[in-house]
Image (cartoon, rainbow, N blue to C red; front, side, top):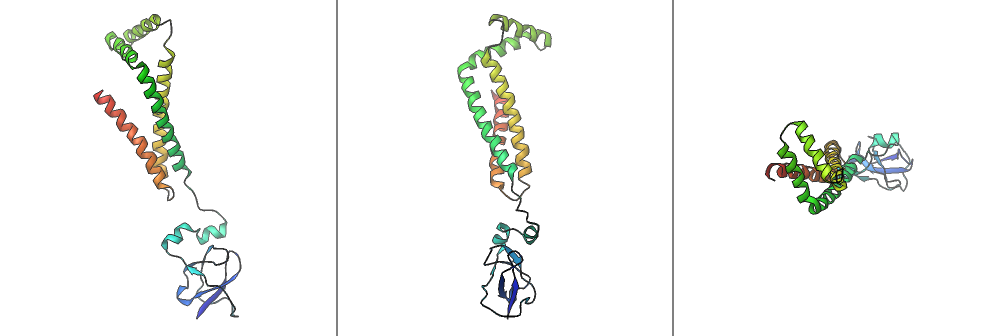
Length: 199
């Protein structure tokens, strides 16, 4: 015996085999998911198309019955995309920082050596910095200011990417994107720790 009923989403008459009672099936008209009743709701047989049973994979990709009734679409995972965008920005910032370092690395190392010679006291460090500024026209070179700002921006971008990735991993969709963003940001942290320890 077949179970005949109306689709809860579009109202069209459909039928399923009786062994699919209380199962989630796909409507052949509107392709939404509906739950088949235990017994027929329509008495007159007619040429009704058969609804298709859905497997576990189909159930995940289709909206649930509750979402159909409320009209709410399945929730996406915008944070995963945001995390990946931050990770891509982090890569771009690192390329710019590397370009500046390639051109001015020796000068920056000389600047840090002068500060280290001054000693650990803040006043001595400040005096050494003022002396360096006076020797270079009364201000820090523009590239040095940009270099420092880019490093601060890269650190903030890395933290934002990691936080967004960790939150996005708790959501069902786009976990691969979140994991890619986390891998990029985590790689940046590991590379930074390595460079601080050995360089």
